[in-house]
Image (cartoon, rainbow, N blue to C red; front, side, top):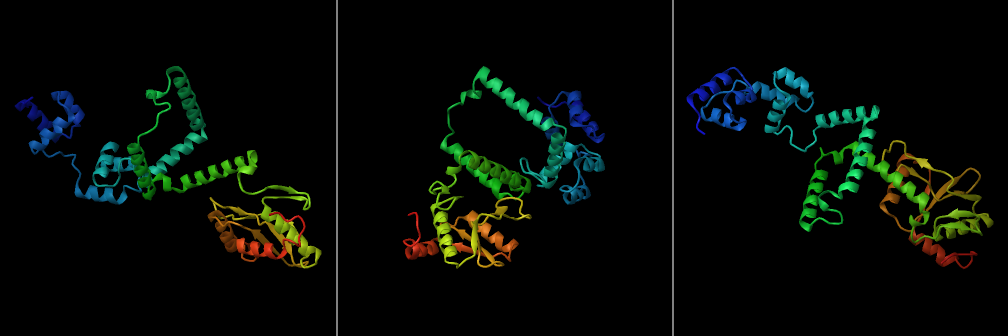
Length: 322
């Protein structure tokens, strides 16, 4: 539909008065994009256009300032400030900025404090269960799987989020939540299925030792220490008597319990760690032990040490397990 001269005059007058586009729509019955495009064609300058000084100020302060304060300073709507910020790459849809993360954090803390957060989660879960029972799974997707193409797309999007330093996946809060969740899951697993933690190890109490051990290697090394004690080459030993905590560590390996505490005399002792397989978690524990407790001596009983001990003394030590 062609524009009449009267409509174009209304457009010129309204732009000069800084009238919002929504109000102009009601006056001439045109869509917002149509009004903006016609104004651009007529080369009508919008008084609401941002000045260079305003844009420079926005670039310097957008990330660290409150959106409401910026909007009040410029005398503009918050949505207008966001739109201009997006135009200059200061914010991207779906990308978390420090200001947005802080705002979301404050909102979540407020909801948790007044109990709204837990109540909303519970209500949403219950309503969804009721919906599924009544109407079946949404869109009939129960039992179906995604295509290989879609899986690759999801994988690439996830990788991109992990590579983005501003992504919530790389925030300290998210990593701490993952650490706490993994810790709780592992404790629950140990409590319910203790034998599943070390699938190839024979855990249990040995009658000849009189205490619980986690593997054959630990049992045999305990027999070796008992062998040394009987020959007065060591004073005594204990199994897992001490636990060392890494207080400054917030996630990952936060404590370490050596296998054996061995007294070589009444005043001197050292810790022995039996480790047939050195995984990353064990390596981290030993590294942190050196860093946080440098005065404690830890002797590593690794595979070469253990096999040499087995070849030399296994026949002399009673109840040695193969």
